[in-house]
Amino acid sequence: MLACNIAFFAVMAMVMPLAFEENDDVVMAMIANGSYSGVPDFHLVYINVIYGYVLTLLYGLTTAIEWYTLSFAVLHILSMSILSYCVLTTPNRAKWERVLWLLVLYVLWVRIIVALQFTTTAGLTCLAGCALLLRESKTARWTGVLFVIIGALIRFMAAGLVGVLMAPIIVYTYRLNWRKYIAVVVLLTAVVGCRVANKYVYDSDPEWKYYREYNQLRAQLTDNPNAYKLRAEQLPEGVEWSDYKLLLQFIPDPEQIDLPTIRKISAVVGAVPFREQLKNLHRLDKYAVEVGILLALLILMILTTGNRSKYIFLILYSVFVIALMIHVSLDGFLKNRVFLCMILPLLMTDFMLLPNTTGLKRRWGIALAMIALCGWYGYQTYNQRVYVQYKQLYWSWMQQPLLERVPEEATLVTIGSAMLLEANTPWHIWPYDFNKYTMGWLTWIPLNKPVGHSYRALLREDVYVFTDRSYEQEKGKLVDVCRQIEQHYGVPTEIQWKCRNGRHAIVQIKVRG
Image (cartoon, rainbow, N blue to C red; front, side):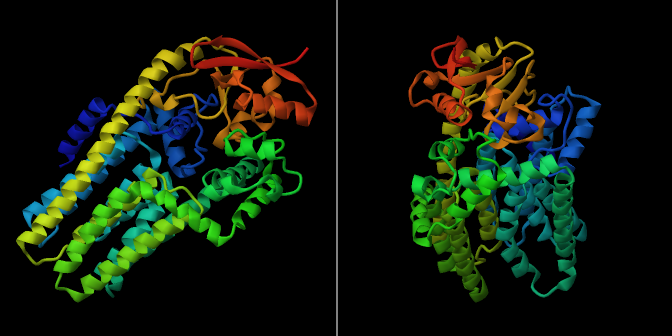
């Protein structure tokens, strides 16, 4: 099974081809391998410092291997091998049922591979660990504990989501066998301990402590649909509407939107009435097909099971999952990677609770529902593959040639997320000959000081800005930045381009006159 999954992952990585979904993983890999700040660093922001420290040790051995990506690949292969083994060896299941569920798992895995990301990697790893916790073997359960801990190190929230969704089936399976809960208690203790260690490392350095809280609050705002509903008159006293708009566009002026200010803004957004939050539920309609297929599968299972406890459990579990989706959507965007982390444990739970009764109609109904799910995600994977190929071509033709013309001693600032770093091969993150500072979630990060602490740093001679052609437009983001520099610091500016093509430009912000 392990050999087959190694071969499968290798083929998919070449055929898809493999790429990170967003810039987040690229920048974290650059921090870990040292190409961001000059030395490998374990402060990966979204990934626990323990995992980051292990990566820095590996990069200390050799930088010829992109350990960040390789570690994800290894975890993917091991996790899918575990899940495949658990499906194939689950007792009281017909061969056609095992084949169908295995097919769905691999279709979803391909969808995850084509948009490689630390959130889905954490979810997949945690799911494999939870599947092992359901086994009778003590060795399997303790191995499961290890996998869940690793998943929590990579992305605590994703692993926590999978853990919460798998917890009911674990309790349902364990019943009152307290000996089995020992592994769960050890697991929870270890996860909490890792979280405490991560917090201690950040809190031990005032700059990292400041950044950690700032970034958490910033992320809660930019990922909260309620933040985009505020009007100028609702903002806290002293907060400019133009500064707030730039914050929501991921390019805040750190000196104007500092930690005390962002705390005030967060308090205002958090006080949005519940009836306004309910309006965000319409965003769930983009998952209508997936939810419809899963509900059809659930109804088929409920109608055919003769086990009353399973019947009740399935209904309560479905209500629980729907309530969780609603809860996430009230003050956040239910992103596809998060939805995938919900789909996988839901399917594993359904498989564990499949009715033992037989019947041609039930078989055909379940088979059609699973095949429909495979077809829908196969279609999504194809679209994602086309999109990745487009980004790779766009990067190599339109963006990389511009970046190669930036002076070696320059500090590069990107406005927004226009730079498609994720289009690079994840097996070798493109090395930079210049320091790179991006706004967004890197605002206030100590690795960028002093460049990343004020818009005024954009006026330095060694600072270049990568932007799209909107810098020439009156309503462009870079024009807004220049306006704020003049408003807050009394410095009139102008934009001078250094090199450009039809879509993007490398520019500098200069003092006018």
